Amino acid sequence: MIKFGPSGNSESFYAAGYEHSEDSAAFVKAHGLDCFEYSFGRGVRMSEQKAVSIGNAFAREGVEISVHAPYFINFGNPDDEMAAKSYGYVLDSAKALKTMQGKRCVFHPAAQGKEGREAVVQRTVDRLNVLRDYIYLNGLQDCMFCPETMGKTAQIGTPEEIVRFCEVDEIYTPCVDFGHVNSREQGSLKTTRDYLDLLEMMLDRLGYERMKHFHVHFSKIMYGAKGEIKHLTFADTTYGPEFEPLAEALLQLKLEPYIVSESAGTQIEDALAMKRIYGARRDG
Image 1 (tube, rainbow, N blue to C red):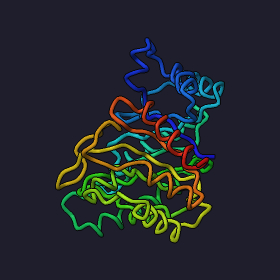
Image 2: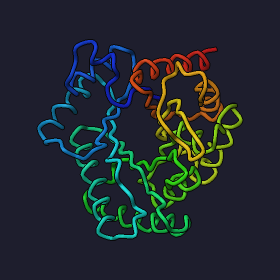
Image 3: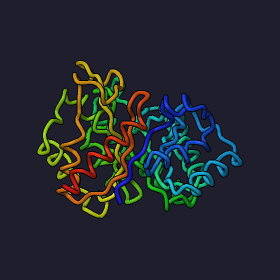
């Protein structure tokens, strides 16, 4: 079943007087939403007791929780010692995720640096093979590990590169950030056909079963010549992408992803807007 929810807590969450992550579960459920993404963006600094508490709160409400691993992961770094830290960031995120009773761990794959792109992409593939081995050794293979499409041209993470990473092993499932794709490709996502072309490429390479419940980040994003600049809200009328043509593409392809709103401050409201748009298309 397709799920919709916010990434982190919206401004309205704090305006309502809430402050604890445990409160997020009931807040999300009260808005008629189905999932929530917790960010370890600046590091995995959560006690096991806190992870258990958060997990139990979300389980009580029937809201699925996912996590975003630290932003500074870079499997393309030529320094093996730095790469070793990246393995740790993903594994620590996944261990906390399991304690929180979640299944999905999103991570940024790599940055290009000063080397040729193909060399960095291949190094990232090699490192994801090593990460795969660590995942199995740590008994974490029942989680979904989701390398994310990236929004800046200097980052590794085009849709084609993400597919290549996911071909390493079935534990990897794409996280398609459509705002990122639209930003790095200078506004490429406008029509249902644009979305279909992107998703059909991924389906052809990975198959329907791997893609049926893929991970989605969605927000409007301001972009420039080098790609992503900053996240916006659905109120913005200058930058895309729009969700309506994606909703139609998902229905045509019978895909049921986990969709996370990353709007700037209005993520719960915009997640609800996406759920309503999808429902209207489905029922219309």
